[in-house]
Image (cartoon, rainbow, N blue to C red; front, side, top):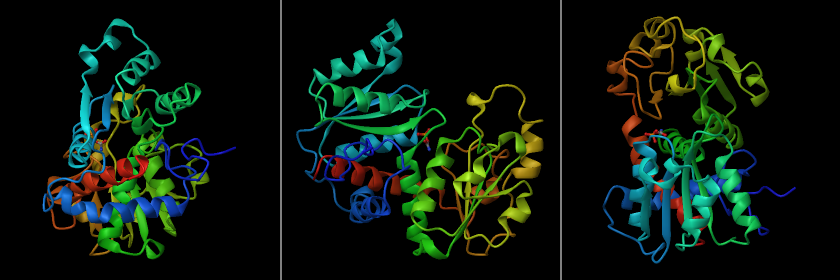
Length: 319
Ligand code: CP
């Protein structure tokens, strides 16, 4: 069966997940993003690649980085950007997701950027558009439930490639709440596809999916052992909003065992980079001395996110 994200020519039609995307497409997105960093950093003002196109941001969950950087990226490509305010939209009156989509299609939407609490919502939209014969309209998943956050995974890969150059020599550790993290799933899929030989996941048993080793990762519950000699440390946010029941004794206890401090970071390579997708819980997932320290590349991740999102949108639009 064809990957629903690809058209019959093997080109990106939607970006719904990293899973199943070939290395060539991931590399093409990273390569396309590289020149856009000049626009992201405002050395070049605007490009006309999405002129005349309408991009609708549909964020059914809160966001600072993803929503804003998609808006900036679309505007720097000269698109018209419409941010639907979900709390004041007709969703609050009970309108279904697909009825909302149909109405926005009637307003000549060209692209939807969607974040939703339900895993699979962007897939549902893409399938609906195909059934309606609206193949010219594209869907980008900006995070769905616990499932996927593909542009976060891609901007993280861009960041790693920027600082470390060669994926095939790296040891990468992902730390924290693996159980509820859509970011971690996209990161692991992207790292594996791009040829990273050593992917470690570190966290307490209560926050680790039981079958995660099937993704080709090494599981550690001892953070110091897991961080030994790694090149990249990717911290995760505790997804408190998705936790049911008491999975953690307390934030203080979590910080003691799995919070990134300078002392624990010393187990990694001296030139290891420290990443976090945000929003950070300082003093729970990461100590401020590390988050603001010389190894941290957390704010460059955000800037690279603009370039990567420009790349994805321009590739979807066939520009
Ligand atoms: N990393 C991330 O998705 O951040 P936001 O929730 O602020 O978009």
